[in-house]
Image (tube, rainbow, N blue to C red; front, side):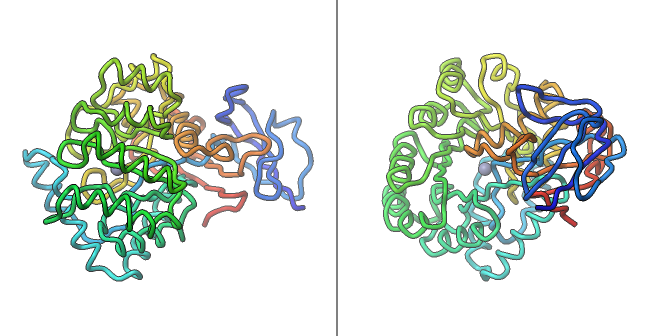
Length: 382
Ligand SMILES: [Zn+2]
């Protein structure tokens, strides 16, 4: 088996709690996995040698929350919002109409282009949700398109009640025929639990039905106001409660004791000019925190994990180490993945070589393209 040695790493952030950072490091890749990490001088021989020339290496980012299967554009809505209009989530229906009208090929090409954009910015694992089809066939084809791009596919038929539909009848559709059509392509089930979307009872019903169909739960929770989403996510053993912007003390306690990850999506607060979640309160309470882009055409049209890291540090008072940890290992926790989000013997060889001596530069030099090289499964992405 061919082995590759990456030598001359100025700083290796491993994401392994045993030894989180190694200065003057090297690592060996074998068969798509990391076979060895340690001090540069002690590295074993390999067939091929890559010189990192003092750059920092981190695990590939794990973007555990993205909505990439859609058509259309909401530039006008963003422009209006930045001119002073409030965000209510109603714009989802605009994207639903455009998505239903698009061909499979158009949707697949748009989603693939966004994944390529993410890869170029260091993301090597991405979750992709449905949720802009909201008919049995449009949700099914959205998930089929997502499944061609990632193993982390999420059925989000419960994104919003489509225009003109009766809410109770729609929940019956989501938990019945739509779930049956979508489950073969989905790993996760998600609900937008929010005033104007789905209430606590509906959220519980939809998640429970999804779990019964073999999916695991995740919830859009407590984004626009306090609500039952986080507590339901914790009760039902969801891997992640996402947004977590408006939390009571009971919500924080539930997250700290349940093992449900709090996934923070600061791109959404940035793009809707809203108050950011209180990351410090969560971290200090012992909650596992993840960072993700929430990439979607309405409320957070960024595909950039480095941008989210910078926001987390500047706006949410996370340390640079906490932010990088949340964007890698945190995301992996939020997806129940043990093979990604860290770099060490046995991990997948998903690596980002930064054009910088330290990951601190991700926040210190916001908006600067710092990704030098990306390896996914040991292969250099071109
Ligand atoms: Zn979302």
